[in-house]
Length: 217
Image 1: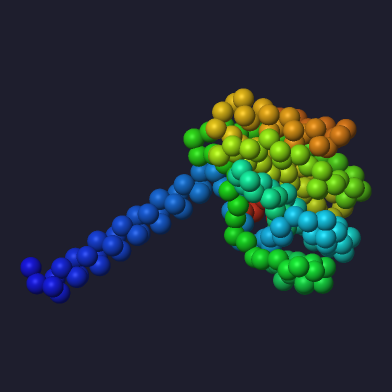
Image 2: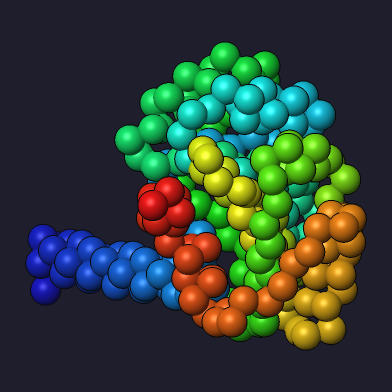
């Protein structure tokens, strides 16, 4: 076999492997309970200044947005994700430009789920004023302290409606999961959360790229 033939075979094999890996990753990310994918979001590392910026955005926004406070894995500082529908992304960016002092980045997704572990989702409903008064920095993610654990607290703001809340936690085992859920829920004082009738449907709603447009209807 000459060098040219060997090079062609090598390149062809490499391309085939790359395509197979890419398709496998895409399929994995689409599994319920694995990844929240939404290309219409911005990311801010949590800080008191970032929380102030978020609340300024809330005071001035006129379209649906979701605010997620997320710890993706052990040792990770919480991040704030603000997402909206694609048609409002430029408006969200303008608000972020006006209110964020330390900058932000556009983000496609975040990952909080242990691939072969367990998860829990809780939902609740509060007023916008109650949501605005929540201290994001006081949400207790301290039990996310093992590899494969993660948690997300989401507030869904739609003009003219109450704020829908999601708490989504994941861990390798039920024991670890209970510890995380207990710590996160205790951070919200008197706010009442409940397990939805269909956990899978609730997680699918949480993960859906269209969750904001559906909530706005």
